[in-house]
Structures are given as C-alpha cells and as structure tokens.
Image (cartoon, rainbow, N blue to C red):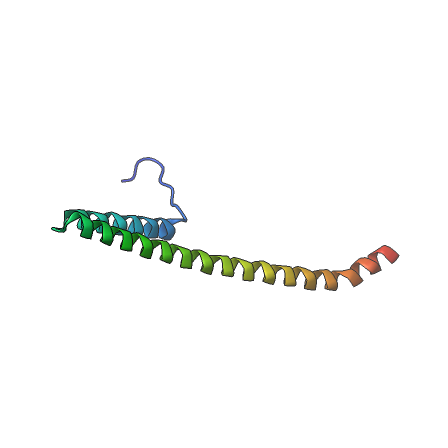
Length: 96
C-alpha cells in the first residue's frame, strides 16, 4: 500500500546521464590517485585526462551550438512562410 504523494519527474534520462558522468569522473580520479605511480606520472595522467575531458565537452558544446542554430534557422524559415501565407488573409479581412 502506498502512503503519501509520489511525483514522477520528466528529466529521468538527463539526470541519469549526469550522474553517470559524475560517477565516471570520480571513479577515474580515485583510480588514478590510488594507482601505484610516482607523483610526476600521476600529474601527467591527470593532466591528460583533464585535457581529454575538456576536448570532449568542447565537442559537445559545438554540436549543441550547431543544432540550436539549425533549429533557430528552421523556425525563422517557418515563421517567414506562415507570414507570407497569412498576408493575403489579413488583406482580405482589412478590406471587408
């Protein structure tokens, strides 16, 4: 028997991906810190991992920026098309 209010969230997939990425990052960092390496090797590995993560985020940002630009352009084209179709109707209504 259920007692209380339960609300479903619509952002389950996004939250799951975010937690997955956080878990991967924490796991990688702990693995590097607990590995039997010298300080110089550890710093080199951490720097390489950081640079790779930065490059990946930059790629994702560029992809998202491109998709948003495409969506905005498509929306502007649709608005122009609807405006051109609505002009004759507006002219007719003004004359009536």
